[in-house]
Length: 301
Image (cartoon, rainbow, N blue to C red; front, side, top):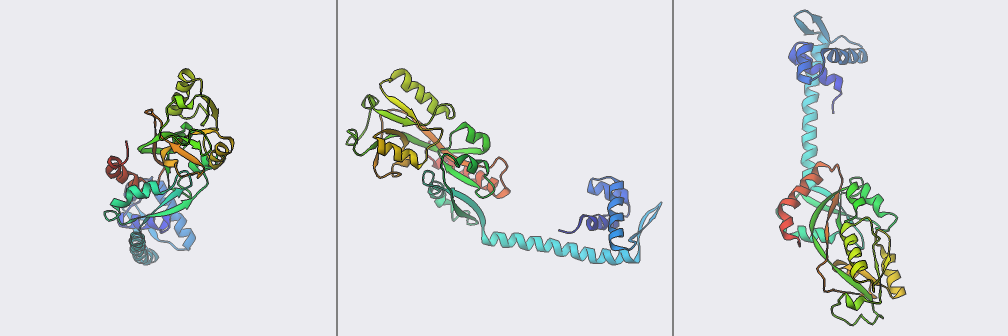
């Protein structure tokens, strides 16, 4: 908080020489002298007398040293009080929330730990996960939002942010209510023959790329339509309006009232987890470490 020149002056006065002060500050003696000269020129007084034996404080130097020490102690106390005040308010984690990726996924997992870590508070930040905006939201993590939670498995997202897996969602199929399959309790791949199935575009999500290749090779009777690399609310609307099936997740069962999410007799899952900045703040880094240590066994795997 204090100026660098004043801190260098106080260190030099304590050490009694420029060379000793330089070693303590991990700089050169010339750098120490430059800071002292700058401070003297700015104040218009001589603070130190140089000699072969070292340095001696002038009357002005003794006065500034005394007041400077008091200022330094006051500054340290001010920082300590600020940190104490922050702890009393809690450590704020800004958690993004959208229709497709609600913050409740993480807050529900965190609920059993609230009493153990009362200092952590969630500030929920709404965002729009449209196809056009989601990548900019991910790449700017740490600015307005600290964490996102959801099924973020695209390679472009993992290149822009760190990712911590929490568990898995089941891959399902959403069926428009007017479709003849809507009355089924569970589907098979054969049930999908002759149907149009919308899914994310190949090339950016490895797990879904393998799934797409499997359909093409073993079930060409299913007509796959690509929705782009990411879903948004329009994806669900289009499927309902065009009587198109949608490859979806069990976590999205309540997204659209006119689409019925059904399980399928297959063993396909999609990971879900936390996205956070490549250079997270200390509070976010500490929070992530707590999640790794305590929550991962609780998540679905």
